Image (cartoon, rainbow, N blue to C red; front, top):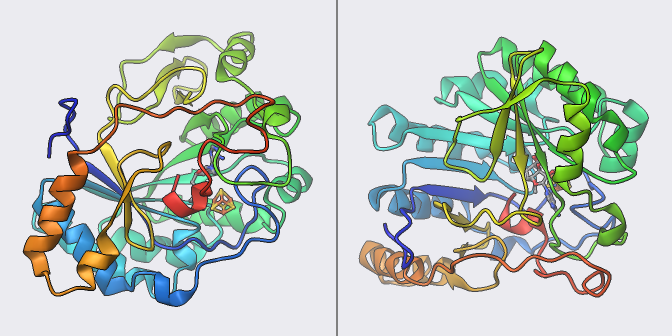
Length: 330
Ligand code: SAM
Ligand code: SF4
């Protein structure tokens, strides 16, 4: 699939649920209203749409959410998608998780063919962890990480940089990740969905984070590219990489190779735009595989050039994108 700007679309991210066992302050309000079940694709529908994308040339699928591992029956979907790895139609099946369920699922994930996962961890301090995630228990996440590594899963940490939230801990996180053989990627907060605090107060540009890290670490630019939006540096002292995802302070759209499917079957061609294609309507109608393929082609033909994110005082009360990150999947 090639979009109007000549970019190959080879990566599908699937949000399998909008629900989550955490309530991270930058992601959700504490009192969230979740989608009614009838609006959410069942596991067979999720698989059928994902299979259509694989037929059309998608080589990498990432499951996300909400928290993908709290979706009931999730291993059935992961196991069926794992068959496309065996057949060679898919290069990678992976997920982004908050880590709370890794003790339970790591072994099965590995058996299904998953080899690398992204785990979101914003702090190592149990009290701060409670503050940021509201409902999370850091011990569950840390033992989940151990289980995952013992099961053979390679882990990359994702850390959202929050001013006044975890900015004092980022050096410790680099050291901690390095000691455990994990790469770590820092992410700027994006203005998606209403939350209970002002985004402009909490926004921390990664240019500032990078400058501060450079005081303590020997960093050299890395040629490492994942096809994703992160720029990487090598850290001489730990031998690991640190990535920076800077949607706000640097535009990362030129090399975008991905589209996103929500758990309600809406296809978003850009994380930061509202245009979408309703694939649930198609899959629940009589059109069959041809109609689904045609709807996907039509949607890719509308993939926009980029996002228009901006965080400032004026935009504090009207986020650039009304839906939360947990709907489209981070
Ligand atoms: N629950 C899983 C997790 O936390 O990894 C998967 C879904 S979560 C929405 C995916 C990623 O998006 C996480 O790394 C999270 O920190 C990040 N995220 C959530 N809201 C964000 C926002 N407004 N700006 C930037 N990153 C955000
Ligand atoms: Fe849940 Fe992930 Fe959002 Fe945190 S960032 S509330 S873990 S979906």
